[in-house]
Amino acid sequence: MKRNWVWVAAAFALSLPVSTLSAQALELKVADSFPADHYLVRLMLKPWMDDVAKRTNGAVTFTHYPNQQIGKATDMLRLTQSGVIDIGYIGPSYVSDKMPLSEVAQLPGAFQTSCQGTLAYWKAAREGILAKQEYAPNKIKLLMAVVLPPYQVWTAKQKVETIKDMQGLKLRTTGGAQDLTVRTLGAVPVRMAAPDAYESLSRGTMDGLLFPMDSVVAYGLDKLVKYATDGVSFGSFIVAYSINQSVWDKLPDDVKKAMDAASEAITPKACADVDKEQDATRQKMKDQGISFTALSEATRAEMKEKLKGVAQEWAAGLDSRGKQASATLKEFDGLLAAGGAK
Image (cartoon, rainbow, N blue to C red):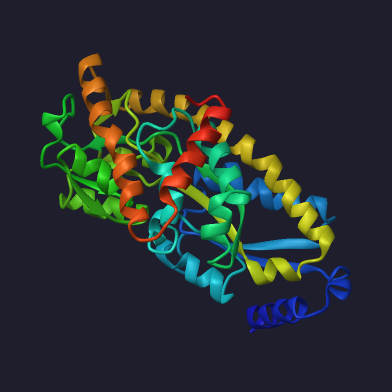
C-alpha cells in the first residue's frame, strides 16, 4: 500500500507545472538487469544518483530496482517509454530493431579502450546522428553511458589460438553486429542477454561467450570459463541509462541542469574506472587458473583482415532499409579520430 501511495504521489508531482514542481521533493524510479553489486552500478549508476541528489540538495532521490526486479533487459525500453519506470538501462543490442544505428559503437576493431568508445558514442548520442535518429524517435534521452572495453572470446573447454579453432563454436552474443562478427570468423552466434549466459554455458548448450572481462566475473562466469583470447577486438557493448522524454520535459530547469552536470562528470570518470579495473581483474583471473591466450601476430592480422568487412556489411544492410548507417559510421569514426582512438 505504501509503495502505491509513493507512486501516486510521484505521478501527481510530474503532472504539476514546472514552477510548482521545483519546490517539490521528487522520487524517480530506476531499473536495470544488473545484480545490485555489479561493477557498473558501483562505478556509474550509484555515483550519478548520489551526485544528482547532492546537486539538488536532496530534493531529487532515486529508488533503484536491480537484477530484473521490474523487467528483463529486453523489456527496459518499453518500460521506460510507458512510464512504468522513469529511468531504465537500455542496451541498444537488446532492442536492435528500435536502435540499430547505436551498434556502430559495437563493431569489431574500432577502438582499444572503454574511454575511446565511450566518449565518441556519448557525443553522437547526445548531439549527433544517434540523438536525432534513435533517441528522439524512441522518446528517451540519454543520461549516461559506458562503451565496454573490447570483447574477447571466452571458452569452457577449447582454447582459441587460431581462426580454425573458432569453426563451429557456439558463442553467446548480444545480437546484431556481434552476430556478424562471430559468423565472419566461422563460429555460430547464440543471442542472449547477459543474465541468461551462466545457465546456458553450465548446461553446455553453448561453447563460450563474447564478453567483457569484468562482466565475466560479475555474472559468475569465471567459475565456468577456462580460456580467453587476448589482443583482438571482437566488438563491444553499450551500457546506457536513459530517461523517459516526457518525464525529462516536466522536470524543473534546475533539476535538468543538475542531471546534465552529473552526467557530464560521470561519463569520462566511469569509463576510466572501467579501463583501470580491467587490469586488476585480469590478474585475479590468472591467479584462479584462467588462461589468457596471446594470439600470434599472424593470427591477429588474419582476424583483423577478416573483420574489416563487418562494418561495411553492417552499414550496407541498414542503408538498404533506409537507415543512415553509413553516415553514422562516418560520424563515429570521425569522433574516434578526434579523440585519438585511431
